[in-house]
Length: 54
Image (cartoon, rainbow, N blue to C red):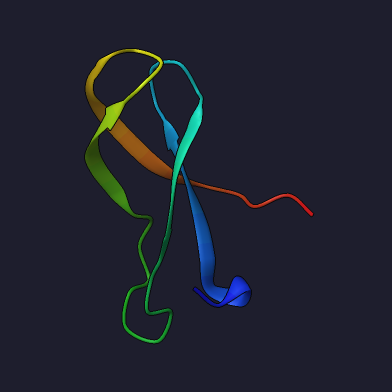
């Protein structure tokens, strides 16, 4: 994946960053939210787009 479009997905329950994804910045203007499996919580939780550091 190209590093310039990389987004981090963070669990809304435990605040642990579990997933990385990309989005089309020309078409999508909203923040991404997905129901994903969190390994820390051991259940499906809401994952929101988080800010990349670095």
